[in-house]
Amino acid sequence: MALAPTVKGHGDIKQSSKELAAFVDKVLAATGTCQVDLVGHSQGGTLARWYLKADGGANPTDPRRTRSRRSSSSARPTKAPP
Image 1 (cartoon, helix red, strand yellow):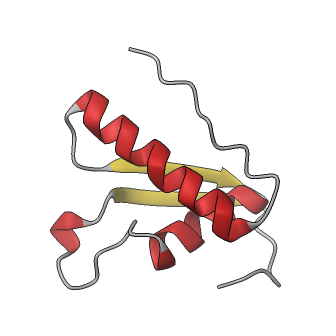
Image 2: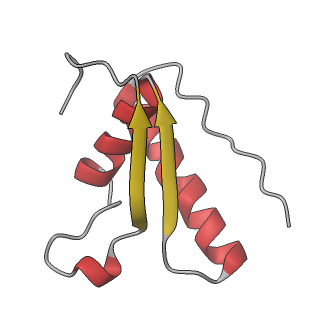
């Protein structure tokens, strides 16, 4: 099964994070799994971090319900939103 990503990540991090959240939900529903791996480059790393922090990607009270098994990024801007 192929799922074409709909997240472009070219614009506002907060809006792109909502797009990422919707795409992750689509992947989870289509595959029947409960977690995904996130890999981002440059702004994609910042996007993944924002999704985990602010848009439901991570569940600090119950880590078993975290939607991302792991996140990896390269060349992430250092002066970006936390």
